[in-house]
Every structure is written in structure tokens, then in C-alpha cells.
Amino acid sequence: MYLNHFGLDEPPFRITPHTDFFFGGANRGATLEALLYAITHDEGIVKVSGEVGSGKTMLCRVLMERLPEQVQTILLSNPSLSRDELIYAIAEELDLGTQNERLSLVLLKLQENLITRYSESQRVVLLIDEAHAMPQETLEQVRLLSNLESSHSKLLQIVLFGQPELDEHLSMPHMRQLKERITHSFRLEPLLRSDVEAYLDFRMRAAGYRGPKVFAADALRRIVKASEGLTRRVNILADKSLLAAFADNEHGITARHVNRAIRDSAFYHPSISKAKIGLAAGGVAAGLALGLGLHYLLSPSPPSPAQAAAVSAVPAQPAAIAPAVPAIDPSGAAAATASPGATAPAQQQTAQPAAAPPMTPAPSAPAVPAAIAATKQLPPSVAAKSTVAPVAAAQTAPAAQAAATAAPVRAAAAAIEQPAAPTGAKPGSMNYQPPMPAAGSNTRERFAATQEWLKSAPGDRYSIQLLTAGTRDLRRLEELLARAPGRNLELSDFYVYGVKIDEQQYYRLAYGLYPTIADANQGIHALPPVYRQFAPYQRSVERMRSQNRQ
Image (cartoon, one colour):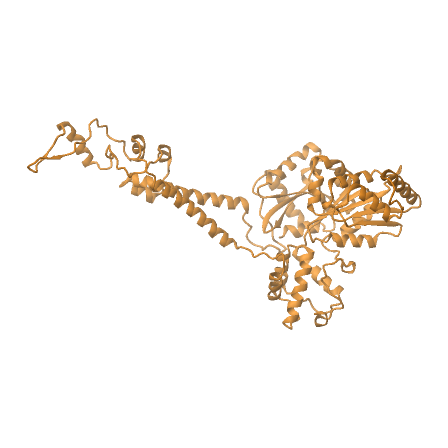
């Protein structure tokens, strides 16, 4: 519909995999080269994981086209196969003609066919898409297929493509044998802002566009935020934005067009501002404080003598006999029935009204626990009122204490959740530096050293990403760094840098510096087991630098 309007030969943002539109940036091209190397060098099982819509299927299709002619590919797109159906599906793809034969005979023919192909310098690679949805017994059969080998190399290469749930399945104790067979593990990360900009321009040029850049800076920011860097979402939003600009008879994509595309997308969820969240949290805290105060005010039980003494500013004076109640004789004169000795306490009580309350308190006075009254730290305004009415001050203290306690708790939680950003350069700029980790001496020392190192480190080198931790999980980074000397690893070879995920600050731990992806993958296998438990994978230094500036 909008092709002629923008001078395009074909739609640039189709969501179906089109290998002519494969984007080699954002480490996709490097991952493709590493896959080609692993398959052609008999590296066994390889795993590629990524979020929904991150480009796994596109990478799989491009891989099939780029493999040499002597490599035959078998693509299994149906993950719900049983373990027996998996064997029959592979045999059918190799034209073994075993539809009605026993499984044991099919396995024998499969092995013989693979040996024959190997002797003729041919290879067979099994590509399994959506592997995260495979039954676990089928995944176990995949491991058994990897046992088909000659005296020198594997007869069947296997590549698993799946969502992060695949990593969770492989982390189960009964799947450890399959996990140990995986020689290379790659992860497709969401695109950064600079990657999205390059991706959009690349797809437009591949579709025949020859003009200036179509997407304005504000439109680009909206696409990056709404898509979360997932290529399928980027395609959907870009396609709808082009249609909106065509409807307005405009040749430039603005934030207005992108906003219309976002509202029309299934994954759109209206965001709640931080100010509204803070207001709602404050309202909840105020309601709790008010409810606590009303609970104490409306409590029907009177205070005990010990509680009344704790509330009073001065200890109560001892009195064995309470003041007598005056009686009225028939002539109207008041007759004092109390003894003369009782007048002294009464006079003392009149002279010092704050000394002690009457021994018989009013029934409506609420009960205040002695432990709370004795240890409570009242605000100055409440403390001033307590000199006039100590019981009233004690009644209002719980509400004041609840409000005073809620504020520092909320402030401390906010400080833990999101560290203060450094002043100066803005996120995304060349000179931006993420906030220093709040805990861990080794973590903080390596973070500071990494910030200096990233300023001049060669972007075409590779490191091994070990772990990503939030601000509340920094102890995990510190534990891994503390174990380094005991595993003959130098602390100076570790790097700690920042990354923003869903607008929250995280920190990543990486190890080593390697000239190529193949060297980095060999470094992964050489790591001690404690560092391989989090499924590490290679990452370019330029990618580390870009994420650190977020």
C-alpha cells in the first residue's frame, strides 16, 4: 500500500523470515560465523537461545543457506515429537525408507547412512527450532543421537534453537548429561538503541529505499522503548508507522505516527508513571497509619496502673485512700466524709496537675501497652502536647510512629532498588558512566577499573559474560570474584560493567579478552565449573561498551 509512496520495491518489515533482510549487526553476524565454524569442525551440540521475537528463526534460515554444499541440513520445526517420532522424522529426511520398520532397525540404518556420508566427506546437521517446547524425553533422545560418532569425530551435528526456558530445562539435575554435551552456547540479546537505528535503515535500504533516513530521533526513541529491542516488535511498529505516515501523506516518521502504531499493537501496555506509583504508595502508607491510630483511639479497655504510670511524665504519688466523694445533707450543706489525712494528697494533686492522674481513670481512656509507651520516641509536636495531656499524646503516638517509620522504610527500599545515577553526562552519551555498585569491595574495585578500561579497549575483541545481577544480588558477583584466586584466576581479568534492563540498573560480570569468538568459546570450556554454572557465552567489547552507556 505504501510502497510507491516511499519508493520501495517490497515491504521492508515483514515478520516472516526473509534471508535477504538478515541484519548482521548487534552480534548476529558474528554468531552466524561461529555457528558455521562449529558445524563444519564437528563440534557436537550447539545451543542458541533468545527471547520471543529476537531473530532465532531468521538466524536458522540464514544458517541453512550459508552452509557448504557437502552439509545436508535437517530442519525440525515441530517440537512436540516423541522420542520415537524424532528418529523416524530424521530417517525420513534422509530417505532411508523405514516407515514400517522397528525402531532398533531404524537406528541401525541411520548410523550406517551417517558413516557412509562421513566417508564421502559429507556432513549432516540437525536443526531443531523451538527446542524449549520439546518433551524432556525427546531432549534425552537428542543426547543419545550425539553418541553417533566415528573414531575421530561426530557423525551428526545438532543445533538447538529455543527461548530462555530451554536454559531452565537444561539446568534441571536430570538434564545435566545433555547440558555437558553442549560445546557452544550463544544468546541473541535485544537490540540497543544504536542497533535499532541501524536495523531500521538497513531494512529500508534492502527494500529499495534511496532517500534520507525516514525515522526521526523522537520516533526512534519510542520504537526502542515500546519494542524492548526485539526485532519482531520493531518490524511490527515500523510497518504500522509507515502506514500511518502514508495515511497522513508524509514522508517522515515522527513520534505521532509511532504512538498510533504502538496503540494499535497487541503487546502495548500503558505505562504507569513513577509519580503515580509514589502517590499510590504514599496513600497506602497514610491509610495504614490512620487505621493504626484509630485502632488505638477506639480501643475500649482502660489502662492498668502500670501503663498509666508509664504514660505519665512523673511517677504517680502513692495514696492508700482515694479522695472521698462529697455528700449533700438535707439542708444543702456538703459534709466531708474523708479523714483529714486525705487532704494533703488532694492539695498536692491540685498544685501539681501533671504529677499523677486520678487513681480511678475515665472508662473511655484507651489502653496503651507499657512496652510501647516506655520506648516510644515522640515527635516534638506530640511531645509538647504530652505535657498537657499525657494520655492523649500516648494515643496519637502510634499513628505518628507508623507514619514516621513508613517514610524511612520507603526511602531505604528505593535506595536499594535503584542507585543514584551519576551527575554530568546523560545515559547513552559517550562520557556516561553508570552508578557505582552499592556493595562489595572487589565488585566496586573491578567496576572502577572496567570503566577506565572500556574507554580504550578494542571493540573487535571478545570477553566471556558470566552473570547478570541486580542491585539486590551484588553478593553473587562478590562471591564469584572472591573465588577467583582459589581457581588460579587473576582478578584483573574480570570486568564489571552496567546495563539497563526495563529501566532498572543491573551489573554484568565478564572474564578474559579474546581475539575471536572461537577463542572465547574455548575459554568458556576452560573455565572452572563454578563459573560455567550460569551458562556463560561470548560478548564483544563494543557490545559491552554500548550497554555500559545505557
